[in-house]
Length: 348
Image 1 (cartoon, rainbow, N blue to C red):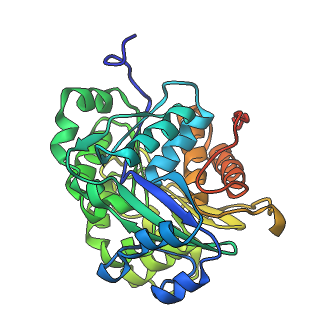
Image 2: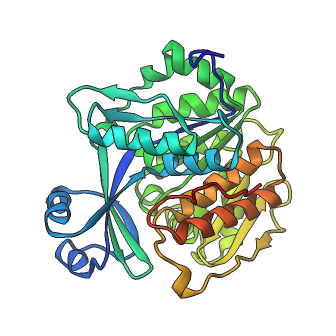
């Protein structure tokens, strides 16, 4: 089968970024007024950080972008030619590094390439087990909905059965997300969304509420869940099962498949609530790693999503998918950046 005819079961969409990682970044946190464990879009005051860390620190370049990390994770656990990813990049060296990382994991990409634009980057400031992400989207936010209608990408969307989008994409591409999610829902296919960062529910609640009706799965961590609780006016920002229930029971365009909400809590138990039984949350303990085993938490949530999606695509149950997510997340935190062990380790 030629590349032009190849179809993929899982179609992912997000902001392709190259992560620029720096360790022992306490002074950088102070200088740029960053929280130790956070994810933000760079403001004017943050822009010098990209040159500074490269010039004054020892950095590691790692393929990033939340949905791209998860897509590589899903590709890691699935057979070849299972996952394809789209997003917007420049025609530059950063994009070439992303393509090389995708190829190793077996992830196909259908990038929109914008001539004259720089590929997006993320400064990852690591302090202990925390990571502060500062993103400049550059080309990533120039994604054009028309790319979805090109013959190559339209064919990939028609051929896929599962779809995954990061919440970060809603900062600029809600029309694209709505097109993909509605098409998935109308055709009885599976659409999953990750909230991605607390600022998404905080500042993009309207966009989330547009997409939620088409979501079969919503993935978040405890900070993102708390941010949603605040934005939605829920009484208790720490009652994770109640927050999950509030999202699971929102109106749904394809009522034949009850929505499932998965909320991870780092080393603490993952909570799963389905609209079919919203008052009976399922709790999945995490096998805690020793402090000395944890190298870097950057990308752990994306790795969880990748393992979870890979298991779902392969026909596993939600329960089995959560366990696969835990396994890939644990693998990721023992490596530098959002990466996976090589040679490959069987997860499913």
